[in-house]
Length: 235
Image 1 (tube, helix red, strand yellow):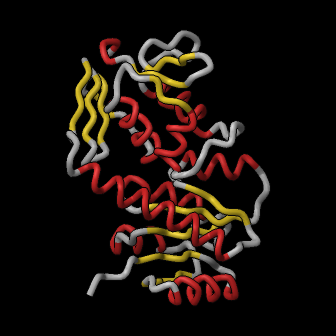
Image 2 (cartoon, helix red, strand yellow):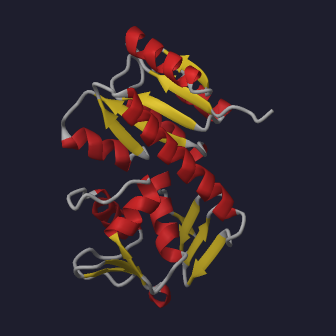
């Protein structure tokens, strides 16, 4: 018998937690429900579920803190649940490593569709990683996908999981223009809406961390009106 996919729900509202647990259990997922943030990161790292549904506001450690704590050691996907309409919270969630977010009140069918997209992306990433090189080297830049490790001139560079995924996607297809739509689909499994600045913000962050000046970048360049391009011989 095929093993059920494992979901962890971290939600302090009892009714919401029960609704999510019962809904996904009925969809034949194995569900673990946690009522607070304290200890959640340790459990997630230990259990390595396929996906985490993580509330933004929690007693103990909040959702952003937990996301930051687990991202480098967690191989699954993270979907943030938030009652906030503030774009800052949405951007902050994505920048610390969430793969997607969904606003409350939650519509179960919409949430299920988003969860399936993330799990399909996880499956595709796992399959792709078995057939592609896991190490890339360009001059002083070294990337190890299996270890999610990046170094520049032999100095380790701390990247969030989503930052590494973006850099790896660009570096694995150098000298090619990657549109915002292509990058949004690759990183988040959704279509680019023409407004979302998540990819652009992550490019700015990568440039800063990798010493590529934002005023006149040479390593990850902007192709006006099209997208971004990784320059392999600029490192």
